[in-house]
Length: 410
Image (cartoon, rainbow, N blue to C red):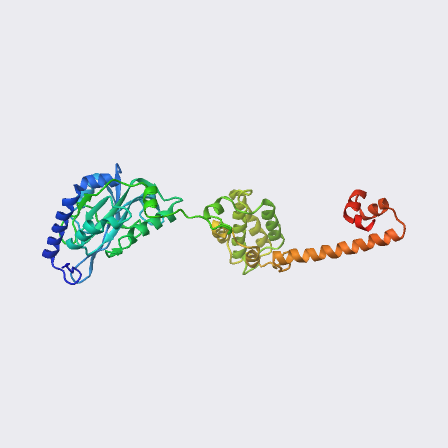
C-alpha cells in the first residue's frame, strides 16, 4: 500500500521512505557523489546562480524572504545545511536570473512530488520501457523524485526557444500517465544532491545512462522544428524590424518641412515630437541618430518664434522624441502619425478601395479609354487621314499604332 504523505506529515515515516528509495535506486543504478553531479552538470563554471526560497515559521509567517545570489562554485557547499537552496539547469546572460535573460539549457527536469518507494519501484521495474527515453540521472529530492535528461553540452536557446519549450513539455508529459508531475519551465530551479531536504535528509543522485544531444531528444520525443505554413506569408520577425526600418530620407525631410511650416500647436506639441521620433527611427538607415536629434531645437525654435513654447520646455521635447525613437513603433501607420501631428488624414489614390477592387476599377477605366480611342481613330480614317498621320496625332509610332489598333485598318 502506498504511503499517503500528503495527508499527514510524519518525519520518521518520510525519512524511512527516503532511505527505501535510496536502497531501490542503488540496487539498479550507479550512485553519484554531489561533487561529481555538480561537475557533470556545470563543468568548469566559476560562478553559479543560487535561488534561496522563503523561510516560514510554524504559523506560516515569513522569517526570511527568498532571493537570488551568485556563489563561487568552490563555496557552494557552505550552503548545503540549508533546505531552501535551489539551482537552475540553465545559463543566463551576465548571470542575471530571469526567463528573458535565458542563454542556454543544460538539462530538462521532470519534478514528481510525493513519490513513495512503492511507486518508484513500479516505475523503474515495470514502466521504464514505456518511456520514449530513459533519464540520465534520478535525484532523490526528499518527498519527491527528479528525473534529469542531461544534454551533452549547453544548448543556446537563440533561435531554438520554441523547440526547447516544446521538448521540455513533451518530456514532462511522458511521465503524467503514472506520476503526478509539477510542470515547470526550463528556467525553474531545483534542489541538488548534497543539499538538505525539507524532511531533514540529504538529496542523492543516481546515474542511469549517458547524456543526450538535443537532436536525439527531439527525435525520441517526436518534436519537429516549427515551420511556416504553406500558402501563408510568414510574418517578419522582431529582429528584422530592428535592422530594417522602412523609411527613406525623403520621407524624413518631407515631415520636417511640414513641421517647419506648421509648427506644433498647444495640445499637439508633445505628440508632434513623439511623432518626429517615430519617423526618425523609421528612417534611421539613411538619417543618423545625431542628425535627427539636431532637428529638435530647430522645430522648437519655430515654436518660440510664434510664442507657442509657453509651458513646454525643450527638455520635454527631447523626452517625447526619445519615447518615439523605439523599434516597437516601426509599424506605425500614416493615419496614426497624422493623428499625433494634428494633420488631415487623406486616404491614398484608391479612396478606400481594397487592392482587388482598385484593380478592377482601373480595368474598367482603361477599357473605356480604349473604346474612346478606337472611336477617335475610326473618325480620323473616315476623314481620309493616313496611318502615319493618325500615329503622329496620337503621339505614338506607326508600328505601335498598327500593333494595337490593327483590327481597325483591316
